[in-house]
Length: 327
Image (cartoon, rainbow, N blue to C red; front, top):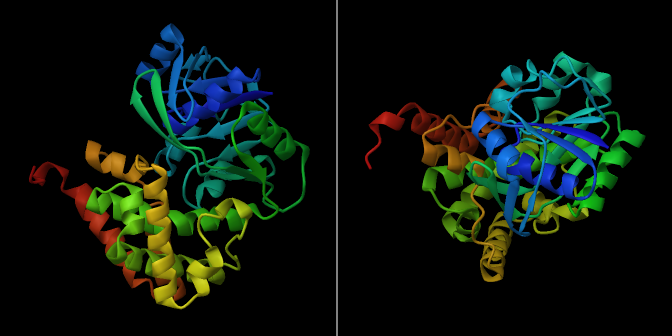
């Protein structure tokens, strides 16, 4: 299977490395420095697995003509600009694995709705330096047709992932899964960015867990207004979505703290959300396209989202004042 990965930083590099090692044709489109390092020395992966693999890596897609599947791994805020560089490709399908629920509309404007495959991933990875990536979370990547029908292209990309050693699943209702990832990400990424704490610390703090459950339920309310029920796929087993949404509030908070304690005890203490990575680097985050979307939709629909609003405005203020930060 010929797979082109646009925006192969941390997560995209993990996918490219695993697919290549398994014998599929994966091509990375990455920043010039990262692409050059991979071309010269191979892609070095560490973390859940340690190996070096030669992956075709390019700084732009101008020399490419087609792909069975185009996977978009650039952040949602960079999508429109990045898609201009691959709009000429003839592709069997295009899927964005990144955060948010507006990305499919962005893809459809360039490739048409018939070409868009829904997707989201729970893979975690960090670009340590050009050519070297740390694989920090071996989560599931979901693919599915937006109209809920089974398809050969979804089956093929899921099979390629699983064959390579990556976790993947075909989702009967991919829109529900994408909204569930939004509900999952909506509190944890910005709270991590604000506090500069890794995710397990956010989960295990009763104070932050309280905020997180409030924010989770605000996303669920906005999703319901869109006619979407959050997914209860077994891959979300770490978090009981029904409990997070419907249980007595204190019970949901207590369960989230327990999850944080379990993750800490298991040694998975190095999960750093990309939003925190961006804040630490003084970069623009995805706050507008993710948490901001929930806030603005809540306003439009008349749904109160006060906790989401406070967190959204806080991260926006951090972004706007990088030069003025006290070190």
